[in-house]
Length: 441
Image 1 (cartoon, rainbow, N blue to C red):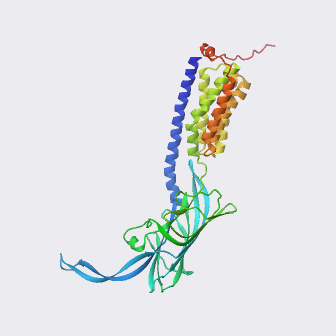
Image 2: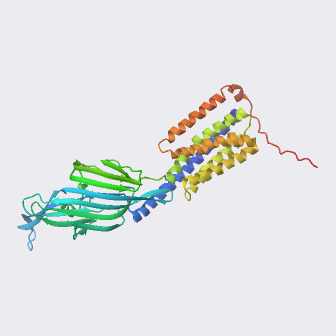
Image 3: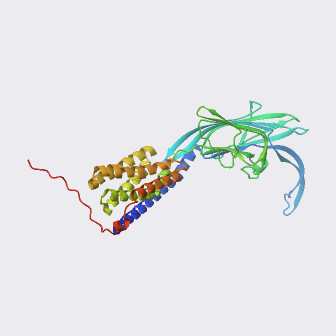
């Protein structure tokens, strides 16, 4: 009996090595496809979009002395009075933003990518709060991770206005009299993947942009009279880390209407939306594969105890074929999810593996033992174990409860067995079932 246990343990270790290799293969296939597919999806649908608040600057022209090299006199300089522009950073007096997000999951290889269409509309108020006429520079940077923009427009007080495009930013200048205000409307449609964020810190001002700055100004920003509304066509909403929670949520059909009505705020946070992620076949199969040794251990343990209770003798080679049938489940599952949904691939792999085990064990121990005891154990420890990985966040607890329940049942069933006598019993060769004799008529 002791030799048999060691032989079964060796077979179990060999199966664990095979599963480790298969799991590593699935992980490598997933990561290699992810690298290629992310580039392809990014080119078609854009990446994770970040929309920055516009930079508003008051432009003043000043006269100052500038020292330059003197023409025609190498090594000499001259000082001249020249006019130059100075940008004084200010902020929009109000921000009213509306966004509409429509989600569509797209599958590439072993992964699903949450792509989305977004319609953006922002209305920004600018007011001349000085006592003399002033020129204001408005700079609105479009998301750099977007693949394409449509319906781009810039309106001033409802009228179309000329806007230059400089380094991916819409720029416009306007003259305002003392106390005069204007509303600038910016709108576009675009596509992205994964997350969408609205950064409250503005983009680089015109002066900073001219010096090479392209990103946000950074740090804590003061936003006056701010409100943002987002409408989604999906119900499973989530918010990226470091973003503000909405002040109002209202259910609308398939999705939500979310509002961030913050008034005046001082913050370095952002507002964002993380698109819901579908179950990814690649990572799911790799987790099931790497945890397969736990499933096989419980199955071998249950079968070993059942054979003791039912008086069925199994040779280690029988356990070898049972382990191979378990491995066939994960092997078929790993390569069928490339072409089928996870649910369909799981059903097909389960039927194939259980068919292998039951059809084999009926030759070894009879149909009833193969179908009820062994088939039932495989249904619980193979199929049921794999299904626990659909319970996001509860897989560990489900496996723990399954293990404890198995231990309790086995302890109750074997509490009266004399293990010392049983383990000292010499190994007996398996009995080969003979075919029933056919009488000659």
